[in-house]
Image (cartoon, rainbow over the protein chains, first blue to last red):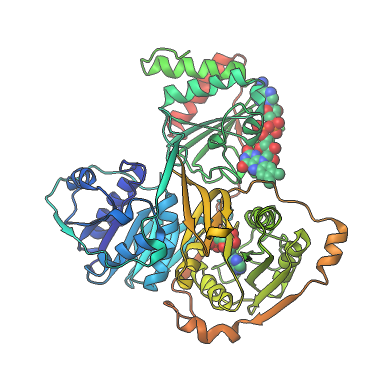
Length: 334
Length: 267
Ligand SMILES: Cc1cc2nc3c(=O)[nH]c(=O)nc-3n(C[C@H](O)[C@H](O)[C@H](O)COP(=O)(O)OP(=O)(O)OC[C@H]3O[C@@H](n4cnc5c(N)ncnc54)[C@H](O)[C@@H]3O)c2cc1C
Ligand SMILES: Nc1ncnc2c1ncn2[C@@H]1O[C@H](COP(=O)(O)O)[C@@H](O)[C@H]1O
């Protein structure tokens, strides 16, 4: 058996995200496990030369490029057309992998629908199956169950961030091949983004961070929220919040984790002064390890947390920050 | 100008999941189904706002599911939708999100739609795949993770914000289109008793899946799911948090960091 993988990367925010590197690493591993084949990276967008340079050293055999002025803004329909052109260049069996970012989550089903391919989103584990194709695992029911799905070739899937190891590559000198986009349907032509409102500070993106520290109403006052941010800073973590914090105007909506906010799956989630309402929990249950700091030992968050500290977040947070910064030789943030 | 909202009936999130005898799915016997996917309630609310503020005329809701899914549609009617369509499946029909999208597409060709709206994801399968696949089958653009929506009906334009990693994009794009709604402007309303009673009399049309099979067979992928579920497994039940004992904040910090490093191995 062999397998040919196409990895569609996401550089919508201008950089190649860690989740894209996870997908590239996993594609290299899959081809080895399958007993050979090609890994190709598919770059779709406009003005891609810097990205081409960035992916050249990723240990893949081919780079496909659709660089077109009409692809400046993301249109799933237009990007799917570009991806189909790339898939056509790879002999079967083929698997298309992409990160489960906002872009990947919308593109994978659209591409899968166009190809009539087996399609799944938010995959956390992949194994080549003995009967050809791939068997994948994904979390369902808010992380309460796992589904194993058999996918015959061609396969299209998005990979959940933080679920696959990034392995540094062996270099390589891939061929760079320009692929013809063809005529786009009118509705897919040149979607133009007027403005990008950036909420990215100097902390990692919530949905992709390996560690997330979150604060809730239990922090008592907006000026105390900085205690959460200080711990995040020394841990290299992203900062999240409950909706109560957003509703109270302490932090913008981009911080909110949960049903009407972001759904995240970090390695470590630290909830500080958050009660654990169901609408918050649906956003975090796929985290690998959950720590809760809450004054109330009966708070519902302790039912789903792995470790609990029943106590005052206002005193425990500074102690944690101090100890982490000490052990890492960092100055205490203020 | 008409809106079509896709809703899915899902098991109550509080329900205790059990594995079915086949080992391939959850056991729906005795499971309480909620009236609606909460993400779809938010979408129905946003669609009602389109009607109330921007002059869209009719709001229809549609679902693919067994007979019990009528409850989900009735609840959307009680929120204020005008009509409902149930694409009725046999109880154990194997479905995946793209096959659902093919049935929705086949039915939607006969239902007026200037805007089609779906929720961010279904609470059970968590795929978030139906919306953009539906756009593909219908040959319409799709816009996902929409966080703000202002239509300009005269120009058939939608002004939108959508979530992207690191922020939001502000853009305008044409409709008809399929939108997946991340967040509406308002929390979903709770139907009042009079509206629940009224909803019982609103039109609800049932279409058996077999009536749509010929159309679905013409779409890529056809009438069968393209993937096959091999297993549905439950992790051992969560025991609840291991509580860390401490006297002082310093001790709390010290003990927590130790277990995170040595036991959980996440630091
Ligand atoms: C349609 C809808 C959608 C929603 N979507 C979301 C969502 O996406 N995300 C979300 O988070 N919520 C959401 N909610 C709101 C949710 O139901 C809760 O109201 C919210 O999560 C509560 O936030 P909280 O835990 O910060 O506040 P609270 O529930 O007030 O909890 C504060 C906690 O802090 C503890 N505490 C107090 N003092 C201290 C101290 N000094 N140290 C440590 N602990 C302390 C208390 O014991 C308490 O458990 C939604 C609600 C609805 C109706
Ligand atoms: N069986 C269904 N019937 C109607 N709409 C559905 C169905 N399944 C999913 N949807 C719609 O598609 C959205 C995404 O679902 P999913 O792709 O299954 O996560 C949901 O929020 C619904 O709006």
